[in-house]
Structures are given as C-alpha cells and as structure tokens.
Image (cartoon, rainbow, N blue to C red; front, side, top):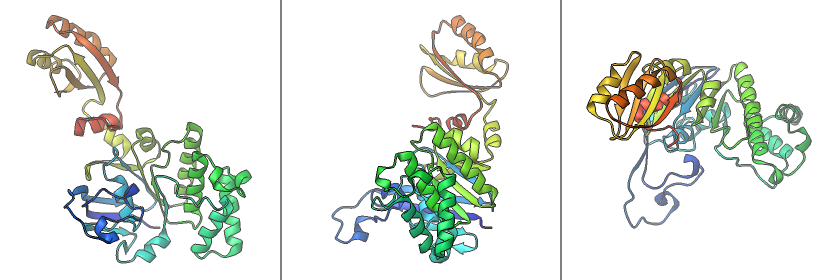
Length: 338
C-alpha cells in the first residue's frame, strides 16, 4: 500500500514547458548549443504541498496551465523540480527513481503508443519490461483486453484505433504490471460519453483493490464523480483542498447568480446584499454582478423589482447550483475553463 506526498514543490521553466510537462524534451541549454538570449521564467509550481493517503482517489482540478501536468511529471520522474521534495511511499522520487518506477503506472495526457505494434504486443512488451514471466503476461493481457472491451482488436495494429480505443489501451498498459499508484493525466479528455463512463467504472474498480490513484482534470463532473478528495490549483498554488462535498459547501450560500445590468450602482449593490438568503455580492465591472445566495430562482423576482426601482435594466441572468465551478469562481474570479 503506497501513498503520495509532496512538500513545497516548485518548478520554474526558463523556456516553454515541454509537451505535457515532461515528454523528454529539456530546455535549449540541456539539449546542447548556446542560448543567445535570456528567456522569461515561467513558474509552473509555486510551493505545492500535498499528502495523498494510501488507497485514495485524489484529483488535481484546475484550468490548462495551472500546474497539474507538471505535478504528475515530477511525481513520475519525468520532470525535475526546481525546489521541494516528492515521495511515492517511502521513496524520494528523485533519489530513488528506479524504485519509484516499479511502483507506478502512468497514463499520459495523450496516448503515446507504438503504432508499429499490435495491442497485444504493446501489453506483452510492457509486462516483460517489468519482469513478468510469459505465462503471467499472457494471462494479464487477456484479462485487460476483456475488461477494456478490446478483445476483438487485440491482434490488430493500433494505428487504426480510434482515440477512445487508444486511451483504453493506454490505461490497460499502465495497469499491466499491477502498480500500487496509478497516475491519470486528463483520462477522459476528448472521449465520448459511453467510453468515459466505462473508464470511470474501471478506475473505481482498480481503486477498490487498495490502489492509490491520482488524476488530473479540468472536468468538474469527473472530479465530483471519482475523487475522494481533490485540490483545486491555479498558477501552481493550491487554492482549496477537501472532499467534493466539503469544497462545494464552502461556497457562500452555494448558489451563484451571475447578473448583467445596463449599469449597476452602489445603491443597487447594497440592496442586493440586503435580500434574504444573499451571502455575498461581488462585481468586476460596471455591468456584471455575482450574487452568492442560499437560493436561486426564487430570488429573481426580488432582483428584478430592485433593478426596476433603481431604474436599471437587467439584461441577463445565469443561475448555478452548488458546484466546483462556483468554488473556482469564488476564489479566482474567473471560470475554470478560461
């Protein structure tokens, strides 16, 4: 049984981060040749500390560029941190890389399969790499093909697979050596709903065997459905941590009403704040107002009445029930998908 821990992780790039934060390409200086000009520093992680329990499904939720893939890159030995430490179980990731690699399975953000091989060859070669004997390799591969609904394509070249089939095979490959910790970087990105639900089911089953799973996502539905706990990160920092239920309940009132007026006024904002059930009123410009409240639609007639009394035109209303999206908006003032 193996958990994950990071302490004050920092990563600063002096050139554009490599593809998926760790695909084997280093900064120009690391590849040879001289740099003719100084590149601006890009802070991908800024003191990130996490403590992920044994057997937990833990999610890193955040927009593109938040630092999710860089975190996974460090924990899977593909990206060297600028500062801080990381452990898989009792093993320091950067001091004991071989021991760490034996414990982990990794599914990259995009499939990285060898198109010159069949699906069966990919699984068998992976099993051999981790020291499984031929009988055990064949047994595990067959079971994985069955579970991932790939049996009828097992002996076909993967170059003809759909994106969903490639993703299923990538996860099967990562599970082939039965790792104690499974890393999934945006596992359902671009998948159709049916394939996504199948993957969620398989992830839950694998976790029930006692395995620790860390997944990154910007899909709030996925985080809510799969994760025991999650950290919402932005600009390389942890801005919220807890169970999905705890995080959603931490939003003032839970409901968010996003209002757009012709032009609001301090008096109107004050009156909105005085409405029963309204916990917080925020504004970002002369027309937009965010109202956090204990109720949603029942507030609209009162808001419309106040706007009419103030001689202000109400142009648009959007109501959101308690969600992780609302939490991100509350902490950052912007949408999770921006």
